[in-house]
Amino acid sequence: MNRHDSRSPDDLSSQEWRALVDSVFRPGPADRRLLLLTDLPDPEGGRRPDHPAWRARRSMVAAWAERLASAFGAGDEDDRLEVVLGVYRNVGTNNADLPARAWRVDPASLASSNLAHGGLLDDAAAVDLHELLESADLVLAPTELSTTAPLKLLAPRLGFRAATMPGFRRDMLPALRLDYDEVDRRVRRLAALLTAADRAELAFDADGLECRLTLDLRGRSAHASGGLVREVGQAGNLPSGEAYIVPYEGERPGEPSRSAGTMPVELDGELLLYTIEQNRAVAVRSRGLADGGEGPRLDSERNRLRAEPAYANLAELGLGVLGPMGVEPIGVVLLDEKLGLHIAFGRSDHFGGTVGAADFTSPDTVVHIDRVYLPSLQPRVTVRAVDLVDADGTRRELMRDGEYVVALDL
Image: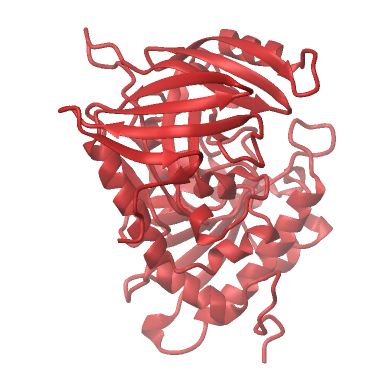
């Protein structure tokens, strides 16, 4: 038996990888190549230096390449997939456009100090990253910095389908063992409700202060990210399990967005209150730290809104379903956003919105940042209610006190 084949609680076996890929991608006879794609840190002193979690991910990805090759390298010809491992120098920030060059490497190199950072890559051996993607049918992207936005845009153009896994850690593995057909069914139920809605009305308790926020959903269609990436041109997160929609951003002349209100966010123990007008954060104030006094996040957020106006855009209303399925938060957005309610700032074009990389001051400042409303992540904020209201005034109760009250398991 291959040394990776026995089931381990802190990894997937070759058989489990086979089952996961079959479930997520449903590969057919025309699918011949699976690309594992990951990013490398900067040399020490660079903006994105290495750290223990990044090193652990590289080792994990190298093992995944071996397991996937074992899972898909034998059997009938129609069932085989060539597994390719590719790396690139990180792009500095989440959801920025990918670089032009990449490198094909073997698993042993990725797991060793030979590829401890991007500066060790041989420029003469580089390949065109778009050509590497175009040559792949299936892409798994366990990266430090999210590739969701660029791969969503590139997948239909280059003809692959992708599961993006930004910030993936071993403690996320239980979420890869879920029944993704059931996950997909639940998120499709929520996506249908979001698409039908004219607006979402949210009520929060922020340390005893009532905050209300309306998100304008007119003319938008929701997306169902249920972990099934079975059509050419699709790309989505894995682990997965959310329905999401971009609030109307006011792009139609003479028709401003009606998104408005107060959005509370707890960052590092400091409770911030964003004033939302026409779907943008126009101001932010602080209620201080939990133990009293002011924290540093107020100044940093004010400076960020001032320096980077595109960051102020409300880019997503997301509804995760993995929390009711027993998955626990771990403090990493890739997984935690799939557990319940989240609202994002920044880039939205990869979700069907209008704010893209060109709207930011530089490629290094492009962001899509989710604020996830779970008690363990924002203990000073409680989601009291989320209602969806149709154009005719029909109101559907969606959440009460952080829990879904709409049936998801129909």
